Length: 94
View 1 (cartoon, helix red, strand yellow):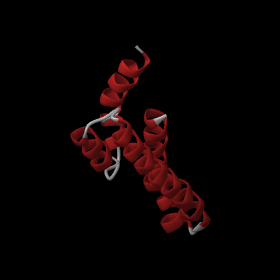
View 2 (view 1 turned 135 degrees about the vertical axis):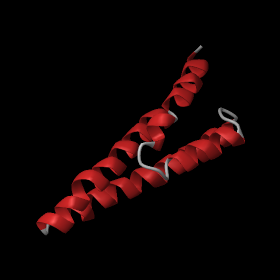
View 3 (view 1 turned 90 degrees about the horizontal axis):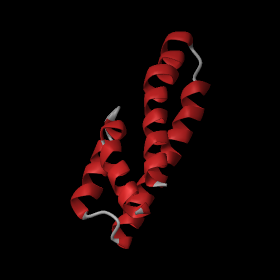
View 4 (view 1 turned 45 degrees about the horizontal axis):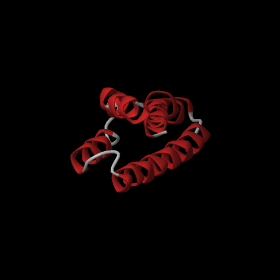
């Protein structure tokens, strides 16, 4: 679940920056940022809640939780953390 939400949050961030923002400022369509921003914000909050839940369960350590949280602040960051999340996911299913 953490990996899926991280991926969706990363995509929503890129869509917000690369699609919605140009639509707002170049084409005069502010609704693009309104709806995309809401979706991204919700996914961001859910991601951080899942990070805290995984930390509390002991699925990830503090360092990994911090890295995932910091990566979410940068465009493309969640995609860089995907390998770590995949390893955690595979370890959990074994």
